[in-house]
Structure formats: C-alpha cells, structure tokens
Image (cartoon, rainbow, N blue to C red):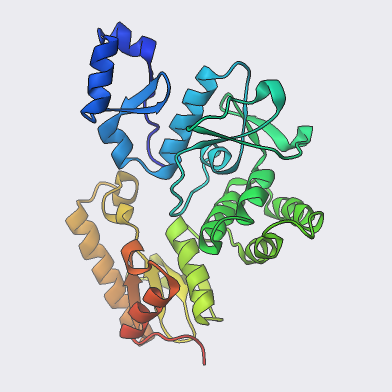
Length: 309
C-alpha cells in the first residue's frame, strides 16, 4: 500500500545541519510537515500520501516519543497491519489507554478507554497493535459500510485460514449484543468476501448491493481468443462490470513491462472480446465515478446495466 514515509526527528534534521530556526522556517514554508512535536516528514510527500501511509508515519513518530510501548488501535492498527482505509481521513494516531504503555494524548494522539485482553495484542513489525480480528471488530462498528467491507475483505485475504478468522470475528460480535454499531458489524462481517482484489472492488460490491443487485458474481472466468484465462470483476444477471483502479495503468506490478498506452490497448481488446462472446453490456468505472451508490447506479444504467428485477 505504497512506500512508507520517512520520518525525521529533530535530531535527524540537526545532523543534516538544520537549526531550530531553519526547521521552523521549513514548516512555515510548507516544505516540511510536523506530524507531532519533534517529528517531521517532507511536506510534498505528506500531501501526496494515502491515509495508510500517514497513519504508519504517525505511529512511528508516536512510538519514538512514547515512554513505553503504546498499543495502537483503530485505524492506526489497521494501517500498520496493511489493511486499507477506504476514504478514511483521520491523521491522528489512535492508542489504547493502557497506563504506562499508552502514548500521551494531545492534538496528534487519541487515547481510547477499552478493555484489552492479552490475546488482543500482537507485535507487528516492532509495534504493539490490536490483533487483526480485534482491529476489524473495532472499526466495522463505526466505519461507513463500504469502508468496513473493504477492510474486512482485505483482512480475509491476509489470514491463512479464512473460516477461523470469520469465526473469531463473529464470536466477538455475538459477545457484544448491545455495543454501538453492532448491527452494522454483523452485516459487514457476513457480506465480506476475500475474492475482492482491491478496496475499490469491495466498495463497489457494497454499493451494488445497496442498489438492489442480488446476482453479483465475483471474478468471472472466460477464455480469451488464444485460450488464455480472462477474469472480470463482476458478473450481473445481465452484463458484466469492472472497477478500474489507476494502478492498472501506472503500477509496474500490473504493467509487467508494458507501457501505459499498451496496457490501455490490451484492456480495450479484452473488453471487446468479452462483449462479443457474451453479447451483453460491459461497464467500467473508477473511484471518481462512485462517490456514492446512486452515482454508480447511474453510470451502470448508462451502459444498460440495471439492478435485478
């Protein structure tokens, strides 16, 4: 989920020859960004960073400043463990108020009072964080459903045994019948599916459900003209669709040595082939096309794809 941001302490900057005055000037001129007292990142990198990168940088800075080892929770624990924060914008670091292990609360750090069992804490890359199932449980009760689905789908892809993780998550939900957001958590946990390849696909699937699509086949398989395997994100009662992340045309992992232009041509040929062999409509959409379920529904309708009758 993108490269981690480099966090510079005040001592690091002093070693680079910067005085206190120079540091203050860099912050004032927006060349440096202070993520907490005594910790900085390049402002240009901070502005371009995703929420997950910002959270990990904040956790690193909080750990450096803490007297003990804080237990990171919520969106911070999620980011540290590699979970997506779909359209979540909270730059504050979240910790559990576990006495000596907690970081001090301030404008950069939020402390949460919550019960914490030993099995709820794991060491991940040198940081103490709430366990994966505890993190997901905490967040899907308060996140917007599409963000919760993206989070849980990703968690299912990370675990070695999917049904064991589902059982632990459902057990937590069952033990908290009156907790805030527990109905939402139950719906999200049941809806989650590890076959989604990206947060955008996960959120799309939730929006499709809200729109009334009940036949939603995931990762639909076709044979290409040369006998190769082709996969499409979504199959509907009539038609197919695909969420296009920008990385498909920019990320070297997806380009596999091709230029962005060649990748675009390949996708067009693939789409033409699928339309031909299915004789059904095909739609593509990007994140900007789905600010909400209604907008996604309108885009699909323009391609002749409608919710199930």
